[in-house]
Length: 279
Image (cartoon, rainbow, N blue to C red; front, side, top):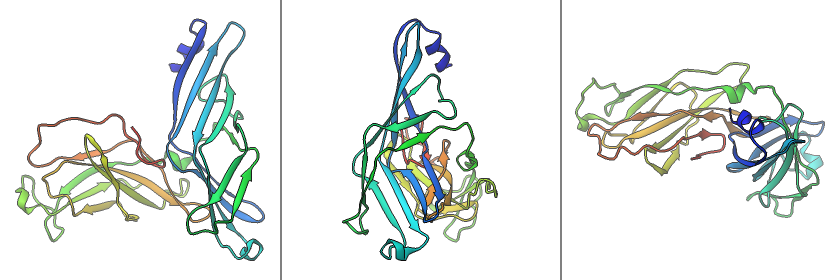
């Protein structure tokens, strides 16, 4: 609908905010296995210039890029078995597009060369320059990024981890057991799950549990029924170089406190996972 309103509109210029909710690439060459991802939120802008002769837009994308390299022969790389590089600044890429999403084969290209340095803990003297970075669009869907699940049920538990009956008194609640559907398949390569928690209306409370959850349930021992918490579960995997990659979570469930507060403020759209917390 957005695209139609632009291309069929009157002559002029329109700017459309574009959010890229996931960016990850991995693969292997004759010398290394590699992983490329965004370090933080990726924000773009689609500037569409409408004229009688040309209906095209300039798409611009900014992001901090992280490249992890795992040499197949560490001895050929000074004995390093893994090296992680991060762009020194926000990488800016630009493309001309005639539709949104861009057609398969369209690509974004870096405006200028990108400089990368090693992250902390790696040799500080390492410097790499990407002369021409390019992101090519494809119409193929990534089964991993399409994998979705959500917490579909929860149960208050006592100090021994046993489920409490409905209507249990707050003093007996010693945690909440969260349950979700298993979406792991050979095709999507999901191997485990990660869980987010926050207090609705207070995005600064967002946190990610450190556990890599191999099953389909988790007990949050910090929930005692006195505070409303929202939870989002996100599929995850390890990529070609062993780096953890989280999928995308667009849904969450609220576990309300036994005595609801007057503040019923709800946050705007939330996204969890691959690029972290976004509003």
